[in-house]
Image (cartoon, rainbow, N blue to C red; front, side, top):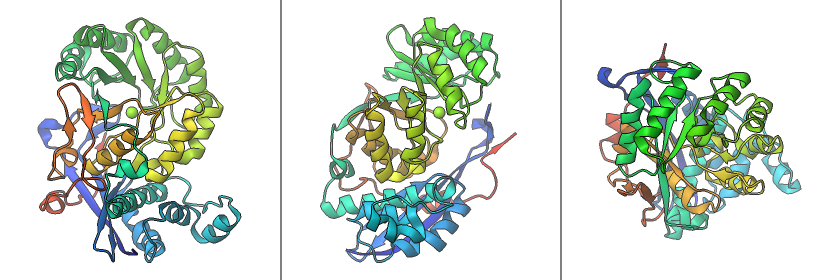
Amino acid sequence: MKITKVQAIQMSAPVPERNRHRTDLGTKVKSDATLIRVETDAGLVGIGAALGSPPIVQAVVDHELAPECQGEDPIFSERIFEKMYNGSRARPALERGVTQADESRRRGVIMEAIAGVDIAIWDVKAQALGVPLYHALGATRSSIRGYASGGWAPGEEAEAELGGYAAKGFTAVKMRVVGRDGFSIENCVRRVRAARRGIGPKAELMIDAHGSLEVATAIRLARELEEYDIAWFEEPVTPDDHAGQAEVRRSTIIPIASGEREFTRFDFADLLERRALDIAQPDVARAGGMTEIRRIAALTSTHGVRLAPHAWGSGVLFAASLHVAMSAPNCHILEVTQGYMPMMWELFEEPFDIRPDGTVHAPDRPGLGFTLRKDALDKFRYIDGPEFVF
Ligand SMILES: [Mg+2]
């Protein structure tokens, strides 16, 4: 089997006026994704998805990654990843067994594009093997607990919002540290107290600061929130300050989670060496696809760090994430978005199997196991411009 074509398709879903709201990230006016298609001479077609700016991802795929993948056999998925990661030095890197990363491919949009292509290659490979993708990766389980990820409501309204997720059956829920009413330590404590009231004493409650706080504020907030039994405090500080994150972790009993903006196992190695986290959250469509996220999962397990894949994007990204969750032994939970995301729910013919008890079940079809709807590419045509406006 040989790869004959690799294609990047830019996609957007506009957010209608009534669904727009302001958060610490700005006001979201659309969601973007880049769909990756890998065609083979066996007639099998794989799909993947990349994070990052779609026009830039497409340029990277068209000019660099597609020519490198053409003619390769998708069964050799590790080799293809190394070829994309090492660029012109792929041959000496593989001959010597030493990574020799291309200057510009180690992180950023090029790595996001590599991740998208890698997912599509794994989809084709698993289809060729005739098994669901998580079987090809090495299956650990066929279902996993999901957690409801949302929680932007202001003040006391957090009680109804988070309580609503628990009422859907989720036994774990996540809320944002910065609500629609902005941020202060006082207000955040008020919102968390309300949320805890809404979900009851048993459900797990996580909080996510999007890396928006300084170390001192993150520590103060963590200490104030300890009595509300927080399952994890996500991205307390910027991902560029691993030492600062380690300082936050040392100062609180709340477990620290991060990783959605990190690239490859090397970023996670640094977080682990600094003892900066308890839960790793690599994004399969950013950190390096199936190939690299498997390595990250194994690496984090050596430090007793659990995996909770970041899964906030298109249906392709969620499908890929659920196969990661079914295969990595140290994965304990999977993110299920509660945001406005039509590209998650309206992309495929087959619905995701999320049960009334909040568990996510794996498909039994070969590969990723999902078929693009006929109208998907027309419906989600790319719209130029930023996703968020301030
Ligand atoms: Mg997050």
